[in-house]
Image 1 (cartoon, rainbow, N blue to C red):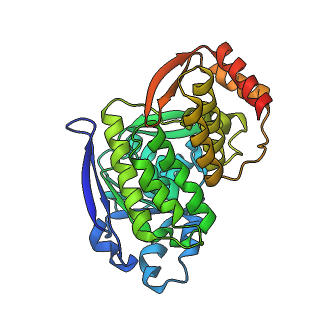
Image 2 (cartoon, one colour):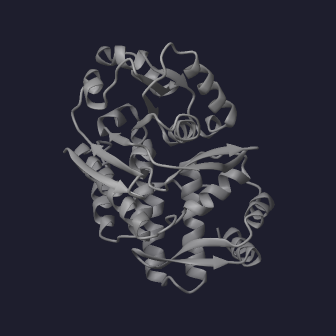
Length: 345
């Protein structure tokens, strides 16, 4: 499967998205225009995972390694990269970010603030980054161990999605990543749910159907781009995922934060009377299939304080399967709902 589409925020601010199968890593040079005028920044762990693949050696070894994860999204890392690039003999014409969403956020902030004339190409290498895309038109940095406190507006010039890169991940990582697509299905397009379910069901015997997974990645990107252009904000679970990561000082990884955040927001939708019990129980059933339910370590009062710092809370409240309505809630009301959630769970 090879697909391509464009996403336009404004006439001057647009991006091209391509999803391609069966591309040998040694052939990436010609696909993305890798040459002496390009500077590759690559996730350290991903680079190590590919060291035994001889066809990747030249391309991967040329990259400047950065440890991924939320901790890399700091202003100190931006200055580190600026210094590294300024020490090059020739100023690069293209910055290539190869890694997960956090590393791409870091590189996007670098390019848009310090190198606006550079072409910015991203090659997402994690299940989450391939499924979510970059349609918020912003690149974020964390500050003082608080999530996404700094941002710059912009888009990558080119987003190259290669599902084959996900073969280095464990089955559980791929299965849990379906949660991101599930959020799109319940919050924006219920028809997408059947594609998510088909891909998920194919993993029952611990085998990945790469055709199904690739199709799901493609559709997830297309729907997220469409939702953004229709002025839809965050998808269910994402608001509280951010709150939870901040409340745990970025120690809770995103997929666990999203899992709990989705449970909280679906619960709130039910308590506010928007979501009927049958739909609520159906969603809860599939959440249990996606993520093993367990207690998560976070301080309730710290979460409440994090919510209160935001002032009014805006949530995509679920009205039915595949439909949300952006709703403004007072922090005190949210605190009461959180207490009910904790007591019931």
